[in-house]
Amino acid sequence: FARFSTSNLTALKLLTQENVLVGGFFVISGYVSAYTTTKLGALGVEEKKVANPELFFWQRVMAYYPLHFVSSALFAPMFIWVERNFSATWKMIAFR
Image 1 (cartoon, helix red, strand yellow):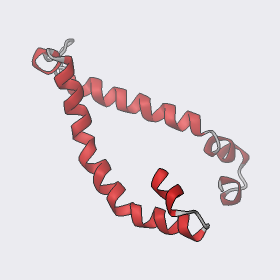
Image 2 (cartoon, rainbow, N blue to C red; image 1 turned 90 degrees about the vertical axis):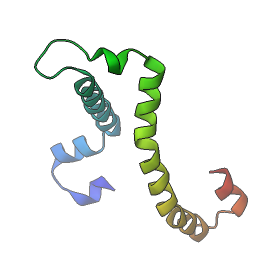
Image 3 (cartoon, rainbow, N blue to C red; image 1 turned 135 degrees about the horizontal axis):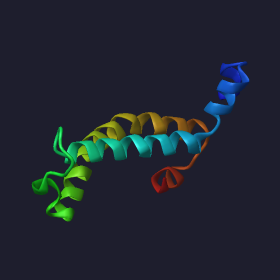
Image 4 (spheres, helix red, strand yellow; image 1 turned 120 degrees about the vertical axis):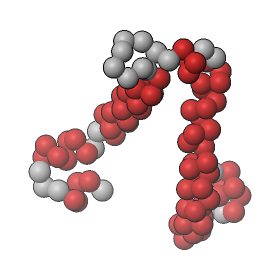
């Protein structure tokens, strides 16, 4: 798809390397996670935030899960419609 959107070879090479884009996302999310657990203006972490790793993990997961659920629920009809237009069976759609 990216090949039809640009004739610039540099942009084309950048856009077709999905693994680079995914890696960039992980770098940004790691930076945000580190930034939100540190004390501003000091070298150190806020002990209250990192004292219980399990609680920290579940707080991070539950911060994004509601948005994931809402966006999945909103776009599910579109995904089902596309699958049905390409002759996928209901059994195959339910599996995905």
